[in-house]
Image (tube, rainbow, N blue to C red; front, side, top):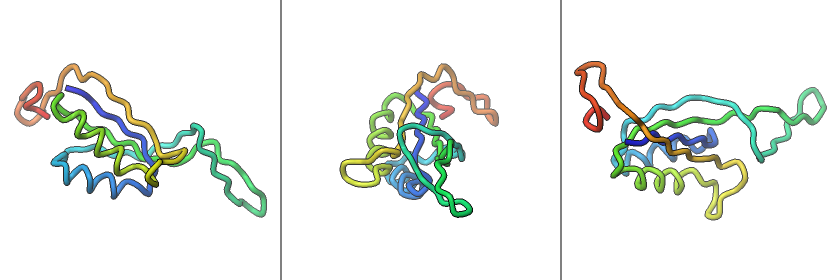
Length: 114
């Protein structure tokens, strides 16, 4: 089991979510987060140009069985890019081992709980 965490642009959320549903990945968790990396956005505030320290992003977390890791990652990669080659600020994907998953309602454990 793996936990896939993707940080993407806010405007790409619907596209990524629809692509995941088409790939039969329907259980996701979405959070609004802020961060910064190489992306640089300038905004106008009271007549002055400012560069915000933190840029709003979307964090998607998906717990998957090992067989679905590549499908999930490939789907997010295709849907989250802003153009064919991608651009700075499109985001990142992290894959972490998931030690245990327990469904609270039934007490199921492991891959069947996902």
